[in-house]
Length: 202
Image 1 (cartoon, rainbow, N blue to C red):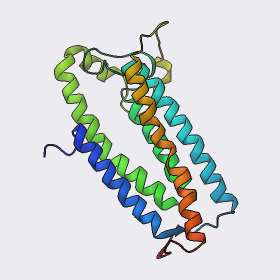
Image 2: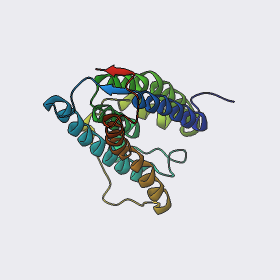
Image 3: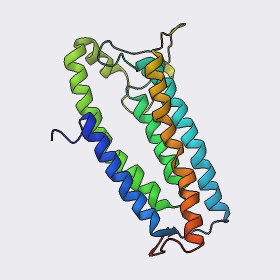
Image 4: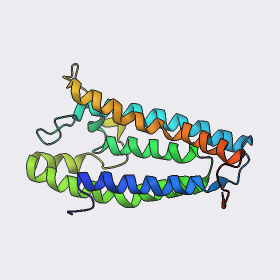
């Protein structure tokens, strides 16, 4: 089967975890009332997080798509943090948790990301070090892994974009917008008693 953090297995793990969370949503309702100010603030701040995360992912992909294992990319978002795609994914993931209107989802999503993705990054960086050699090792010592150092920002005046990969990136990014309408639909189904309310989660 291979490593659980390899590309194909990582997708499988992510899908299985998403399925478990969807199952939880189908049988539970938020403790916070639908029209309470706090829940509405969570939902719409979550949407802002998702938008920011998706925008960051798309922008980062312009620099890395098709180049990751071919050359050292250290400009744009990659000049301030080594893993901008994952950082932006974390922001969007927090947003998805907030959109649910429950702290439980925020904790589950953030916790799973924090536990799993550092292992993914360590594995990927070992591979990149083998492929790119001393240049990558130097880059790794200078640029932080997770917390952006914005003072280091640099970007080229022009950038060649591989349109096919950009199109795929946009399609992948669209997935982050799916949970919010799903939450609304599930809440409506709970409201008209077409779904069970076995749990009330904070």
